[in-house]
Amino acid sequence: MIMTSDKRGCREIAAALAAFGVKYAVTSPGSRNAPLIMAIERHGGFNTIPVIDERSAAFIALGIASACGNMVALICTSGTALLNQTPAIAEAYYRQVPLVVISADRPHQWIDQDDSQTIRQNGALSAIVKASYNIKGEAETTEDGWFVNRTLNDALITARTGRRGPVHINVELSMPLTGEKEQDGSDNFRKIETIDYPETIPNDMARAMAAELADKRVLIFGGFMPPSAKLSRAMSVMTGLPNIAVLAEGLANLHGKGIWERCEALMGNLSESGISRLKPDVLITFGGSPVAAAWKRVARQWKVKEHWHVGKNDATIDTYMSLTRRVDMTAEGFFPKTATALSHLHRKGLIISEYAQNWQEYASETYRLTDRMLSNGNDENWHGASAIASLLSKIPSDWNLQLSNGMSCRYAMLNRLGRFHRVDCNRGVSGIDGSLSTAVGASMVYNKPTLLITGDMSAQYDIGALSSTVMNNRFKMVVINNGGGGIFSFVKTTATMPERDRLLKCELRLPLRQIAEAYGMVYANAPTFAELDHAAKLLVDENKHPVVVEIVTNAERDAEMMWKIIKNLYTNDKIK
Image 1 (spheres, rainbow, N blue to C red):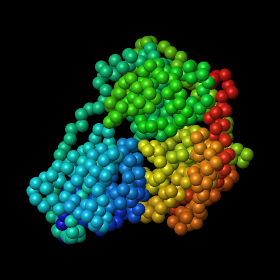
Image 2 (image 1 turned 45 degrees about the horizontal axis):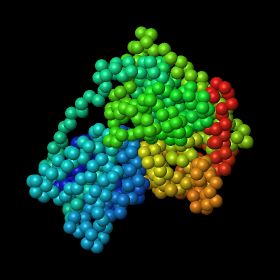
Image 3 (image 1 turned 120 degrees about the horizontal axis):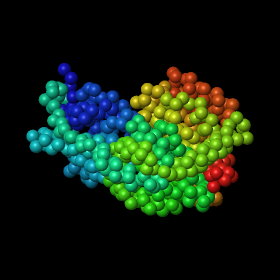
Image 4 (image 1 turned 60 degrees about the horizontal axis):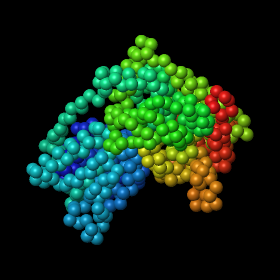
């Protein structure tokens, strides 16, 4: 006989999550959410993951959900516990990751009555979730039960359909909290089925759009998104057409020949003639927000006559101030058939252009010069960008990469990341908080190593994630230690501020060796290329413990060399 919570609403939540295929539930301790934890843990079939700190718990749930592509439940107690989860929930909203946020609450009549742990939770996340719901945990009457069932169906359907994203279910729970009843199957969940209509572009529309593009110079740009073999194949077709160039950041997770990455270096110092030579007639964008500031600057300067944005979005996204067409379908639904239609026109001899060749000459030369400036082996060339380039060259391609925001992401994206299995970064909101927790969560659901590349300030901000019991031996971590806040030496607006070092970069106390020992991690220090070679070998060979590598550099030199890479490459007429 299995005993479970006597609160019907909590049992319905557990049954609903199971019915919709949820496998992971990340919980944080508390008394008000005890019946929710009881119902989920005793239902069976869930991987229930306890994480003490709600902020870290939410980012771990984000990492799991983004890596496995499925909904993940996130459960907390009442009061400020819910508010501590908001950074990760905001990130999930802008990355279109389906978190199911379930918060325990006091009964509504006790809100604002000076009772402990009572705040206005219902609707507290309304700006950063797709929808908010409020239900009674007891659900004692027939109508209450019907309302809970209908509400849970609505919430879980909303999270995973259309533009996917987080939803918030607030559960009012009265004392006593830990009453039990026998789990007898009487609460079988009534799941409301949905029919997903096809979201692929019709053949006739694909042919019509291909005809529009056939006599134009077309540039396709991809921002962050999960990997898709179908989309990668479509882009490989596109790159074989003479009038099309495909530019994509490493976070777009595209794998294919002829896709140009390294956008910061490619666009960093184009001359006026280069900008004109590579300007497209039509810009087609997809995926999330771009990292490369140089790309955004040039794309806005172009003021193209036609800009199409492909993707399921609730808002009109006009990043480059030139949008002329919204294509409200997924990139997977749009590009494959459109690529096929364009390829057909090319075989008939109807597409003639030198645009792709212009990009080929320009990008190939830029890659050559970038590689030369990142070349390693000489400690006179030791700086953050060259160290990360050297490290990545030694990492197996079947690893997943997680990047923190700031300079870590920019260093990594100077390299060809398309060879890795998957690359992710919290670019929905682009904060430094939670990168470590997100990576720990992501490492749980990938059966090969996950490598986090992070800065020292970001690592310190989220160092509590290392205390989580869910960290496993597949988790690898590289910390760039340049005294904290290296990006403030790179960004023009802060580089010369007198207050920069004391108030922006801040003094860091990050004893990584001692922290690694405390949490059972293997530690290596890399202040030179020789030590980095040893550290990279340790990262690859160590399989019994998680590993942390500390790369020691100088922030001023890091910023100086980064500017040289993206501003001083262009000495060859081929790319001017």
